[in-house]
Length: 107
Image (cartoon, rainbow, N blue to C red; front, top):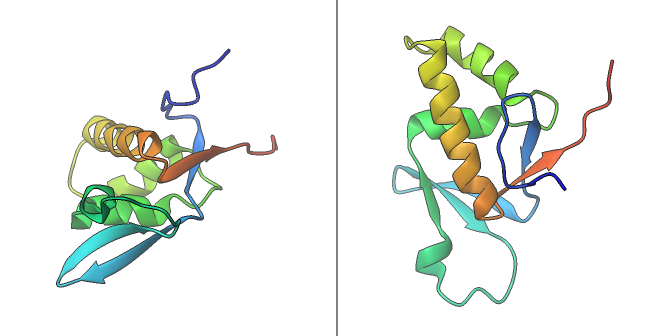
């Protein structure tokens, strides 16, 4: 059985419908919308501007590799660095249930 927690560049991801991103006092914060959260301090996830740009491109249509290709046009950084940071962010968000993988129809 394939590990659903393993993040791959050729996989499509989308933010969970149970999450919302808000800008609070100049910081971008992912806020869970589900009930029964015991300690809100532990469930808030702060995004810096680069991570927010990555989050915004996770639309359920593009693979992480395609998102990285878009980000390379916006940032003066090597593709490998962008891919690595995108994978790290996606892995962390996936573990926390803030991101989900989606099946994409083959063209």
